[in-house]
Image 1 (spheres, helix red, strand yellow):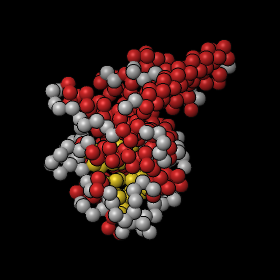
Image 2 (cartoon, helix red, strand yellow):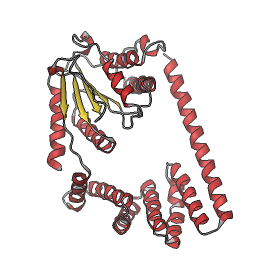
Image 3 (cartoon, one colour):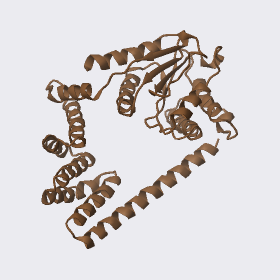
Image 4 (cartoon, one colour):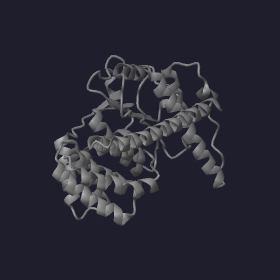
Length: 349
């Protein structure tokens, strides 16, 4: 497994360094996409020369994906510009006005994002723009493939794209059929074989390797516990969650402490050991309240409501479900506010 990961990292790094190919297509299902997103982040951290633009938001429609890509670039630009000015550096050049225009197709909008990001590359030093077109969830595969087909004109490339590298998540079906529009040298493919058995073996090796940093061993243990719980291996999940709880309590990480206690409650809840489930659900209330993650309290309210309903304590169940509904409404209101803020960001040059 470690060799496979290193081979993938090397393949991605080699693609960034080479010149002829513009596209690197990496097939990844829903399971592999999350793992490869983490691997791509590690490649980015190891690269101190190039500029990475990660467009990993979910793909629902072409218009939505392109608009969120533009909003992300604008937000990152403003953050970087403010940081540079604060440190006494010269300001960044302004973003082009076309980036704020709404009267464009989704492909044009996404192309303009790449073009604007490319224009911000530092001069000298051989910097490249590495754009990760890597949505973790894709609702409409055909629309996704069509958007990328229209993204750049085939054959001759625009001059601004000379230092551009595109790393693209490819689906098993439909695939990106660039063979009719791009010369073979312009497109590379990389195989990904991060199967569940291979991943499980890798996680087990990492969790048991005392030479690995403790944080990495615990991260591997958390993923193993999650897999055990999802596949009904309750005893294995229980043992691993108990070990993780002791670690996060020692670390003082309230978010993960509450999350693991909720998971332990769910393990016992599934086994209908209600007293033990209640013990962990109620024990998670304080760390969840102290954690900067309100969704934990909503999950707890729902789980406590389910438990009370199962035991016939319907008044208690109604109370917990009402708390859950309030929390859900609060989170939805926050999301609506965030969406409005993104819309304002989109319209303000």
